[in-house]
Amino acid sequence: MIPDTRQDMGVSDLLRFERVSKTFGRLKVLSEVNLAVRKGEVVCIIGPSGAGKSTLLRCVNYLETIDSGTIFFEGKPVYRYYVGDQVVIDSERRVEAIRTQIGMVFQSFNLFPHMTAIGNVIEAPIHVLREPVQRVRERAIALLEKVGLAEKADAFPHQLSGGQQQRVAIARALAMNPRLMLFDEATSALDPELVGEVLRVMRQLATEGMTMLVVTHEMAFARDVADRVVFMADGTVVEEATPEVIFSSPRNPRTQQFLQTILERNGRG
Image 1 (cartoon, helix red, strand yellow):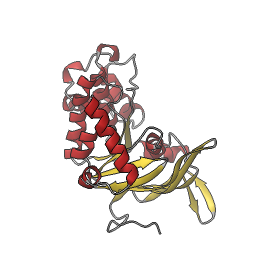
Image 2 (cartoon, helix red, strand yellow):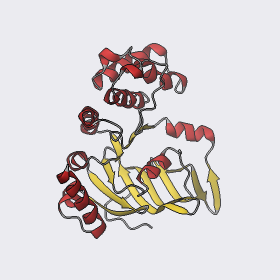
Image 3 (cartoon, one colour):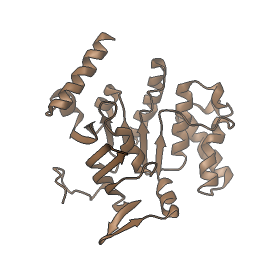
């Protein structure tokens, strides 16, 4: 059994990593990672570049495969796991079924350039979930309104600012009615003046109870919105606690050093 200080381990976990490891060649990117995300919880992952944060997120929806350990989604092992002493690899059909329940927003917006904003939002529900076009379109309009872009429904990506494109990307992910939202440095490619409009949408999702796993360098967002903050370094979870503990009195020297560096850099800026 994996040690964990939280009560009722697994009862309300939507996502859980148990001793997850991943290598690229000789480079060990993830090493024995144990982490859980409860339903309705916002967990922010912080840490230096090369810590394995983005790789961890990409393993959640099988954009990267793990070498060992187990990922659980809704209490069930997924993708690659053991049954007895036999390794089981999930079928493509099951992988796709799991992915439909997990929305992901990347650093780059990854919108289809030849489709309008609403076209980007309705694409997956219609062609993956096979939902009726009219119902999807109505939901898409509501989602674009939710992210403050109802008037841009017919605009193409090149006609939108970076912040607007990222908000369309969020609406596109939400159109699949996901159980879990992953954000991988969703604001890092944006000009500073555009960051706030994306963070406002993310804050709203958090207040509405969306389960979110967020890799971010926005420390104020992590401090104000997260239920828990996880500090990663060298492919491991070094420390996890409430934002109050992490930002006011971190226990691990690595966490202390990282936050001090961030503070000094922001002070110079």
